[in-house]
Length: 311
Ligand code: BDR
Ligand code: CA
Image: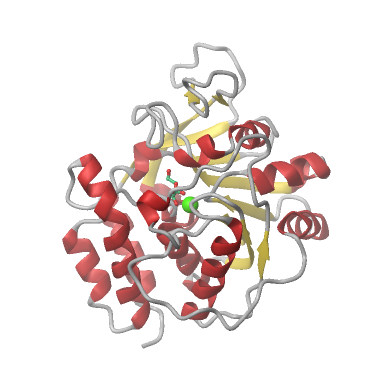
């Protein structure tokens, strides 16, 4: 599988990149950054740090949109810390981002490959993807699939009472992506809120005989400080890695093909993902919407993959 990860790292974004890098089933062609959890400059630094942590300086990082299409940027430093990467102290990167803009890279890469061969993994606000689709409509036929961590049905919202963060930050971009006709798999809060980063699970990462395991444990321990208190669980949710886990083992997840639309008109419910679970709208299905995961098996897979990093 050839994939591009579009991201706003974020500790859980970084774990997603690491899982893609270490999995032989996946060829990561590049990482594109977007403003979200932190500003796009910081997100780019964090992506570069992740490449160096993995020893994969050969995978290029491209900086993308510095703000949502229409709305002012809202960040999530209350969850991820000021740098988006708090919890583990990684050195400043010695490598730099590629000179090409993320949107140019996305368009060029998809157009240079045969139709249906590139999967986009969207784990931040979908600004870059929407810009790419608007500039090159042929992407609608050429992208194999978009796998996104975003949205919610029963869990409703995490940044407002009715909106999940990635969609809330750029609802207009999410609407363009959802209406694009590209096959979409959505890993919403309904799934991610069940993957608690419990003390026992993080201890397994920490015990791995390499540095990556300890760094991931430290990152997720920081990220859960705010989240575990908020939800009253042993550990916080685990969001973005579900995208790569689904690519590796789709059988871990269960859901349905449904119609999903995004609210862009109401300030009260801005960014709400409106999921037609019961098919009452009569609108065509556009999303494979996943609601359940075999959580222990998912953590076993993460642990097994992190164990592959060298000591
Ligand atoms: C999403 O928001 C970010 O804080 C996480 O990295 C994830 O992509 C969860 O709502
Ligand atoms: Ca993210």
